[in-house]
Every structure is written in structure tokens, then in C-alpha cells.
Length: 117
Image 1 (cartoon, rainbow, N blue to C red):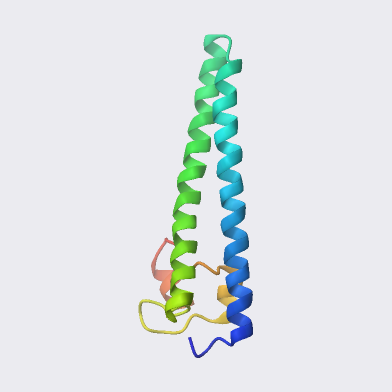
Image 2 (tube, helix red, strand yellow):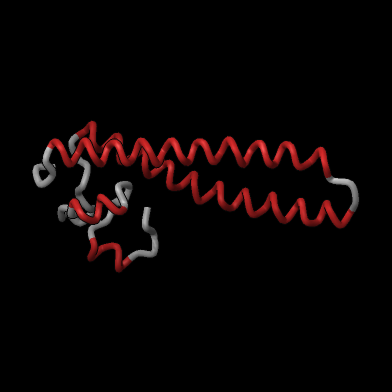
């Protein structure tokens, strides 16, 4: 982590915490929508649309769960002093981390994988 200054690390940690809170807030909102929508379904047609809406929310939640896990791992890496190092051993640039603070990949390795988290 020598390539990141203390100020840069603090900024990235703040970004991670902010993103984590946004995801948690979204989870709460999605859960409330799922729980409340069941009360208002009146016929089979509405039930079909309600089911589709729930499936969309569940898929979004899965994506957010993966992102949340990556955020948690990034925060742990900051604490351990291993943050900002790709699996290939290269340093991940501050500019890249500023855009994707939870990424585990340098620019070169990200091209080789479809996984941004």
C-alpha cells in the first residue's frame, strides 16, 4: 500500500463506507417493497407482475450482495495493509480505485476477467 498516501487511503475508505451504506439502505427499501407488495395483490394478473417485480429485486439484491462482500473485503484489506494490490502483484492505481474502490484487479487483469468485483 506504499503507493497510496494516508490521505488517499482515508478518501477511499470513506468512499467504501458510503457505498456500503447506500447498498444497505437499498436492501432495506427492497425488503420493504417485497413485504408490502404482497398485501396489495388482488388478482392473478397482478400476482404475475408482482412475481416478476420480486424476481428483479432479488437479482438486484444478488448483485448488491456481491458488491457488498467486495466492499467488506476491501475495508478488511485496508486494515491489513494489503489494499490496492492486484492478485497478480501489481499495484492498482489510485485513479482506478477512486472509480471502483472495491475492485481487486489492476487495469490489465480486469480486461482478462468479466468480474469487476
